[in-house]
Image (cartoon, rainbow, N blue to C red; front, side, top):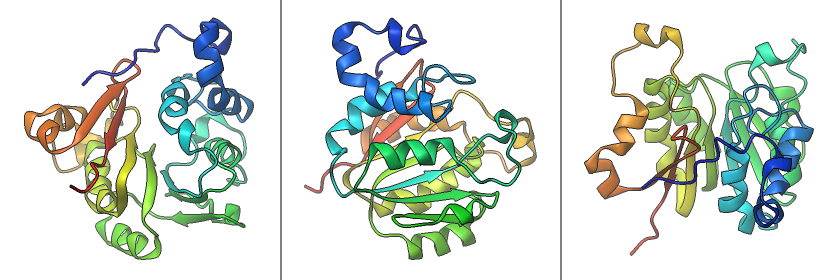
Length: 222
């Protein structure tokens, strides 16, 4: 299934008034906190327009969210990892959520209140097993980590079972892989894997924003 193509909407001001009222909330927060998930900073992926549409109904719920990958360091001058734009965005958007986060850099000083941060490698099955043992069941997972297909698929294998029925699992930037991915054991590209007939039959999969964002929704138990 193909989702919205928001490639032409580069700023909130470009959105039609109807869509602005429905979708600008999370985008405004992303732009405020300088997250490239929004429409004005760095690569301005505009993923927040899709997130606002799909996740907006959960905004005031007591959900649990996990994000992998807290910041792309070349965009920022803070070498101490004292801030995370996306973490700040999610905290403000979901005021009642418990938020968990993972990064291979040390963002653990950001752990406070309803936020808990883990340091580890999303491609390490041992770390992922330890992580899962520390997590509650999840409503939302966002993978914005290394973007290596192997890492994305290893993470999905361990974390998707932890997702609640009806929950959302997002994998960002599936159109791009890091140059060092060729040094890893070969696997299919994540985008190709989730477009395969077998996966489409088993899972509720959709692609958005010029097919850069993969969304897997866990089916409700029958």
